[in-house]
Length: 260
Image (cartoon, rainbow, N blue to C red; front, side, top):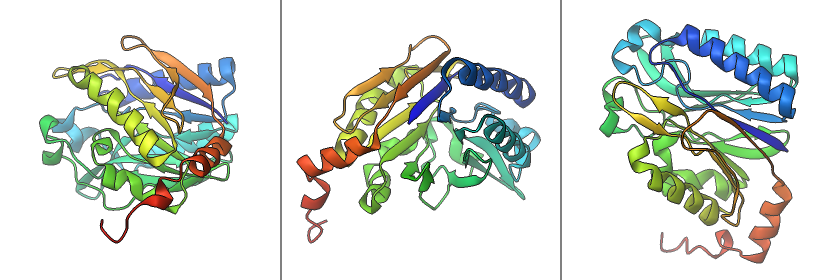
């Protein structure tokens, strides 16, 4: 499977401009690389303009669903839709929407752990369900940004056979070393691929780290983007490698479920 992470800048609180920029980048990625799967960053529609979510969030995700479905079907690619500000009645969730090559909706994940350092909990509600879904027949999982600090949550789908972890993010530059270390750790401990798509650029409160990464189940970095510029990060992954690693080092089988 060829995967492309779209590491882009996001304009603060300007969904219309972000849609235009992201569509241009998607079409460029398809033209240049012909990937099987595209991965988008966190809150690519609004950025962290949290105080204005009443005005700019997407009611029932209707706009994003129609747009993502259309692009996935047009280009016959899977789109792991990063996340958007998704409104359900009077509640907003930080939500990933994913679509397959036929434009079919294959997965929804609502960010479960909200980052108090960015006051996310004041404006967004937490999800309660894991992000398992299947991409081209490969069982996968998704978390969003801050979720990677909670290994107990991340591991659950991998006990059920998931092989790929998708991580869209808006990870700040001052904790860039944590980003790298945590992603590698999640790949090693779950013996899975980690596909992490961060944004770059700044908003009024933060500068973001970029450095999107694709990591194999040994914990080796297959591809890594710049920390300072927009980039289409591309790599081929082989889900069979997950089976090989789990057979050679049966960590998941050696857990002491009687103790923890």
